[in-house]
Length: 293
Image (cartoon, rainbow, N blue to C red; front, side, top):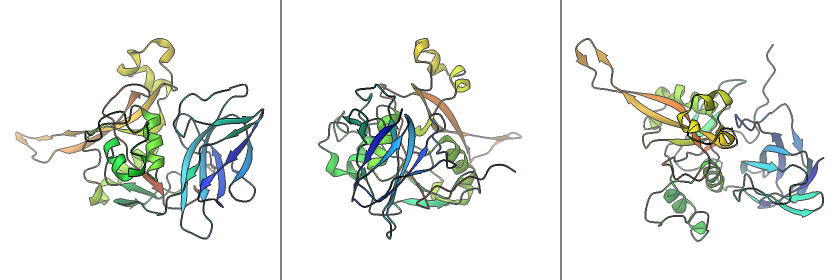
């Protein structure tokens, strides 16, 4: 059965588009679109699942793309307090999603525009810096008293405890996490964008994607877990950089080249040093992918 889902934005009067979101890849299915009547606050009827939600302030350049969840029927309380997991039951068939705060800027500070690939990856703005929670507190000083962002002394650089917290912080900072497909495109594009030469220099970063069963089977991190936790519900994908020095003849090439990899990481509870990076689509509406001919 479907739920009535109440949607609120700050500021109000936003148009709301909702796409099913693949729980593994994190990509929206742009062949299916639900649009709420009128502008926020408004409602939609949605089946349980993961969703990619677009909020647009018509007549302005302002928009936001966020992730939201609709729980299975019969669920009374949410698992997780981050915005991509949280919902509030307000009636037998009704839930409220967390408010969507629409950024004032179309492009956030220190972002570079990367051209996409038609029918595959849209044009993307990508931040040229990696964020830790410490940076997040600087970006959003109004959140500094919130419990979510205060798991460590504020003068120490520290990292989100897991993928959901990184997704939450990215939304609060006005962007979202990249998917692993977008990551691959960014890596291939790096030679054309001098501002991205330091991409992943600080170390690992979270993506918005989860590990596939094949990735889990070959992951040492996953194999350390009890069997019931070796699923995509508990294992996400992080990305990292390893610089390789190339030996040419007897001379060592002085300039190492960067190699970029995707690897599985436990989504919850571990204080791994995994940062996050903001991306935003260049357009407010995800382009509809055409079926292959």
